[in-house]
Image 1 (cartoon, rainbow, N blue to C red):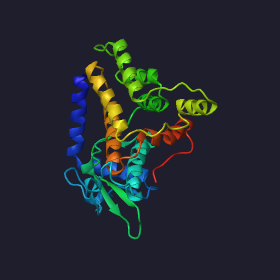
Image 2: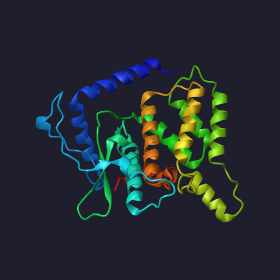
Image 3: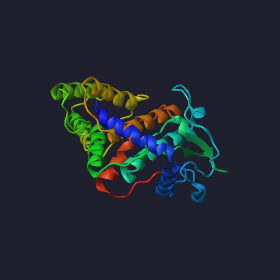
Image 4: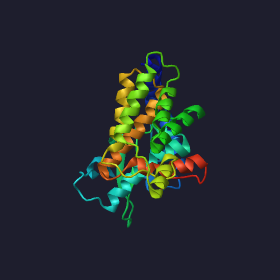
Length: 286
């Protein structure tokens, strides 16, 4: 464990939480980044009334996200499917497009509201005091790690996990690579293509152009949680910014599956990675 890094990150987060001016600045930044999104809403700060100990912001009328949870046996209507897509778009835009993401995403920080005469709900995002921005190197490593999962390239998956901590003095790298590859292959087994159609889909998915077939409910949560468990078991060092990013992605998939159990976050992410890889068009949330 990187105890100095953890302590430094904790001190940083604590200082951000007790100075309301930071949260007001974050709200301004998120409102600018999502100004073209109709269904992802952040409160607007009243800057002339904000200070170190006071935050005044616009009110968002809505209900807690948890009131919209459904089970795998419930039918998924368009409103619930829309909420799941909004949650995924929110995180993918913050991470892949903006490089400025809410580092404290959880159901208690999300409201669901409705505009007049609109059949689709919006997400209201709260409590943005803790945010994260990655360096260019951290962005490259994070994007390549997530893209390697979409491509099912387990060698790259383990390579970029290890790069998230720089030196790995306590990890048996060979054992870690073996166990992560086995976990990934068990969750997303490779299939050798035999026909032209299978070859088309195989290489389209390998290079991130086509998405993989839909997985069972909560698949990405189980997949990433398994990797987290192996990181802990093998004493792999992960720098705090990467941990914040991975947690945000994990929480996003959990929340999406609570409102649409049929959603596959890995499949849904493919167009975002294609857009990011070619730097065009700039993909934004709806």
